[in-house]
Image: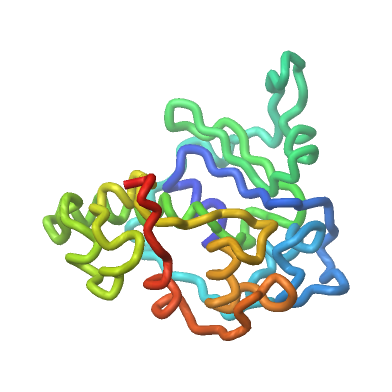
Length: 230
């Protein structure tokens, strides 16, 4: 999915990376299943993910595209206030390792900027933007009467009955206030996020204490309950 496709869904989307840093467009040395998520290599990897992992573009219906008003006239820079100082948005992007940003005001594109190896035509790894797309899809499906957000996860996915999400409602999940003991610590190989990365093949090597690639269907039911969050 290109950045222009993503921002047609989101009011403001910033693509960046944990521990990212500047990198040119040629493939850097040392890109492996163990290294691609970490800076400085991730800056290149996030816009060349198909050269690292098996991915596929999802085709859209060209008859159902909502144009972004003003995109053709959007500026390629803006002056913004940051920490009490007036700075150029492009400079702020470089300092924070932001790959791309689209600014909308009252539904009209004001500025569209790119940095790193991202271009308007190039795809970028979506990471948590996927949650926004999923949430919007769920709202549409509920409006059509196909799901009930007040029902529990186990009503729809019985395989997760014993997991930390089993008794959460779909609304709880969409509001990100679930009961699981999920831990998002990117520096710890014992954290849930890293164990899942390894289980589904996104990560290999020294960060993987569990070496078998078992897939999410087997991994997700193993995520437990955090009773303090119920």
